[in-house]
Length: 254
Image 1 (cartoon, rainbow, N blue to C red):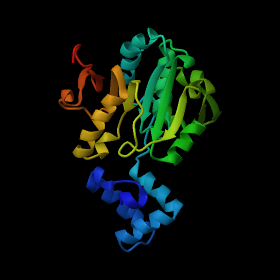
Image 2 (cartoon, one colour; image 1 turned 30 degrees about the vertical axis):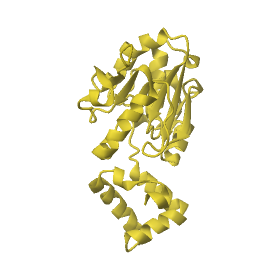
Image 3 (cartoon, rainbow, N blue to C red; image 1 turned 45 degrees about the vertical axis):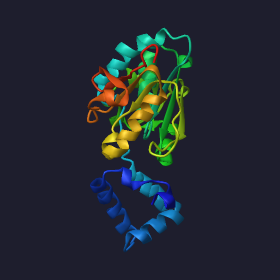
C-alpha cells in the first residue's frame, strides 16, 4: 500500500480505517482490496476520496476555548519578548480553522502579524484549498469570543464568513505527511490536535520525538483534549499546562 499510493495504513488504527475504506470500496464497486488499491492508484478522484476518508476534516474556530486561553495567557507573553518572529506549526490543519485561530489569539495578545509566522500542513490538499479560500459557515464560529467575527471576518451572506487578509497573511499552507515526510525545525509552538488518536501507539512513538526535535529550545507542543501524552519525559517533554508539553532542553555540560 505504501509503495503504491504513498500512505502506510499500518500506522493507522485498523478498525477505524477498515470501516471508512470498506464503505468507499463498496461505493466504487470493487470486489476486493487489490482492485480498490489499483483504482486509487490510477484515478485521481478516488485517490482524493481516499484521503478524505483518511483525514477527518471536522474542525471549528477556538475548539476547546479554555486551552486557547493558555496560548494567550502563558505563551504570548514569552513571544512578545522575542527579537525575532515567532515560528509556529499547525500540523494536520484540516480546513484551516486551527491555524487561523492561532493567528487571531496571537494578534489579540498584542503580536502584530509581522511578528509571527504559521506553517499549516495537512496530507489532504483539497482540505487545504478550502483553508486557503478561508470561507466558513456560522456554525464554525460557535466557540469564538464575542466580537471575533466582526473583527476578523467579513460576512458574505447569512451563513458565510470570509477570513480577513490580516489573519491570512501570516499563514502559509503546505502538504505534509506526518508519517513519512521530513519535519522542519526551530518552532516555538507546534499545534497538533485531534489527529494522534487515529494513529497506532507505534506511530506515536516515532512522531513525538520528531515533534520534540522540531521545536526550538523551550518550545511547546499543544495537543488535543483526547490525546494526553503519558510519561512525556520519555519523549523529551515536561508538562507545561493541561495538554501542553514543553521541550526539555539538555542540562549544561551535556
